[in-house]
Length: 400
Image 1 (spheres, rainbow, N blue to C red):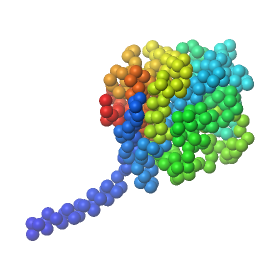
Image 2: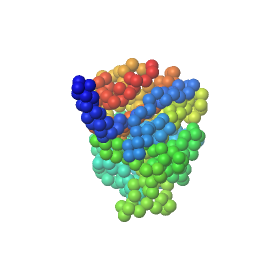
Image 3: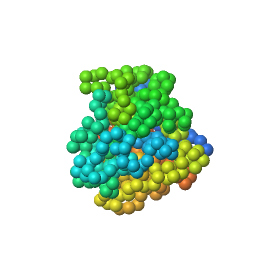
Image 4: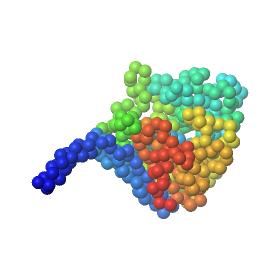
């Protein structure tokens, strides 16, 4: 009798436990790949790349890495500088073919160095950095909402702004005559043997597209890149009438199309390979030494009141080069030591569609990490830094 009393409840509870397990939310996808000058190592790979199919994420799966794309775009710029096709300190009007000026400061030229270091006087406004097919960059920059009336270009004021990078991409296109996604494939992605691409354009193979990581919000809703195994029919934001004919696009008219500020899709193994190439630049020679030094030397340093982050907050960005962050700055008001060890690192962060990502390396040792974690709740705050608690927890799991 006692035997049945024990077993019967277990038989009743077991199906309930199984049902609860079946309906529980999938763990967020997270991947981290460590690297040094000798190679790379996958240290974290967990969660699902696609919840609908149950496909587990791997370090070979491409994901939209958000603003780390800015650093990669800057690498393309510096390659063109090394080739003598671009000058960081020249008025970008000379490349664009029309005069670009801040309406409140018409005598101040705007340069690539100002754009890449977020000191151009541009603002994003309500997502005004997204410029659809059929609209030109010149038209968008005529909107007064994209200009900071209080700060002149090159005045030393930093305001993190996505719209800087469509201007940069337009300059790159005009200087070369190539569409941005194809140009970046030629300058950066193919030389580093990366199966990666901007906005699923040139560079990503069909096999890689089938492995795309679907981005989810913390609610579980799909946020981006539910490709279902195939390249999107339209690679850019369509025209106002819904059309998507890129055949007539003239390079330089709208550098926003392929999302130079955030649209790179790359696996964490690929991002680690890119990190190795740049952290070991003296050996790889991917950039000339002057270009490498210019890119990573801070063009702006926070002094407590000379700049703002993307959301109007300070403390996250404390030293910034040409699309390159420096971590673990010690000036008052800085909370940018993600690793909590006081070691200076270079790289860039990424934040969009529920994803948080980072590419960070120690320039002295060459040791670094490429990571992403997804479905991060809005407002998630870290304990020791201005990064999220999810990122801090991931970093704490890495070997030191």
